[in-house]
Length: 514
Image 1: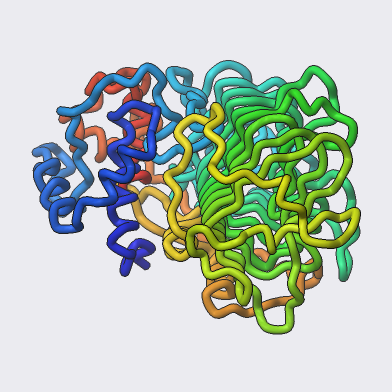
Image 2: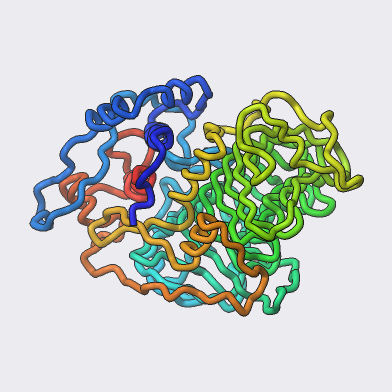
């Protein structure tokens, strides 16, 4: 399946914009984006053609036909002082470096623990990049507890066809900094019931204090608490510089909580981005946010709900709420974004959002009508709103699309949908559950949520890399290295083209250009 077919021309230009961001300054101002967006598609195609050359190298494995790979023109590289996590990274966590320069750890089996397991890889120490030599479902019998883990990249896209699903319990990152997680599915499915109870602890992805973290193209569902939680109530722990993007969040007790939980330190929270995600088969918290820093909720697709949407529940937050698409199925009641008076007063910029039957997603509509004050259950008063977006300190803020453009952009590319074949070439794959969430959104179908008896794990193909896939164990497919370098002598931590990204990152970041 080609996830990028039939894209709106403006979205095509956005993808081109994302790809060249590796080489331009990480300060992406809106003027530059507007200039790029204004160019017509024909010119963009000519530019792309000029930046592409034949990538087929003559080597021992080149007797078979290998699909072309994108070749990136570095002639306009200005050596940005802060390199992004990967070319298409945006928002608060976009400057994380993860395991860059560290060792490669291979996950070689689907075991709960032990040598070659995911648990062993995540609980190791030191800078590291985790790659996968196997695809399938990892059933864990207890939480994977990642304590003080810094400088970590989890490259789920390196798994063979089928990807990786983790089920049975949660993945907990405690006081972990500088983490990149891509193309991973987490479905704990630990609680049982109809409806499931709130077990107050089981999240698909749980970050209990941390900074410089980005979650990209993942899938979070079937959690007994929040599907994603990035928060803490422990004073002294930071909760800042965090991004969730291009991720599917579905059918959990609630969806997402970002910031402070309970009586935490509001000042510890800053630079939180929630962009281009799909919350489908949804309940509540889309997301909830609390703290004194800058937040952005931009260009997400929210399909269906139970009783409420986003809640701002504490702190003097500065929130950009732009270009989101709220799609209401038939038979579902109206629900609202909310301010819950706890302490402090947020400043909200809410504009360009689409809401079925209420807002058309046009600029300068009155978006205040989709916000209420929980103390009065009436529309939130105008003094909570500001007339222009907050500038703030959020790095590489995603260039805002219209709500309709965002809908198309997200639906066409979201979730853990990429893998590498045995030639090191990017391919697409969505498991049947994620595909159903997307289909339900497209067809506007509402299903029963919070019923654990309906949670049936898809049967994933369990593929193992052949022995000649990565003979030097550097995390890069031999076939790709031969095409790219001509031999297998380059180190994974080297930087052959001197652009700042190491050779292993050049390999795993190919997904950004497909």
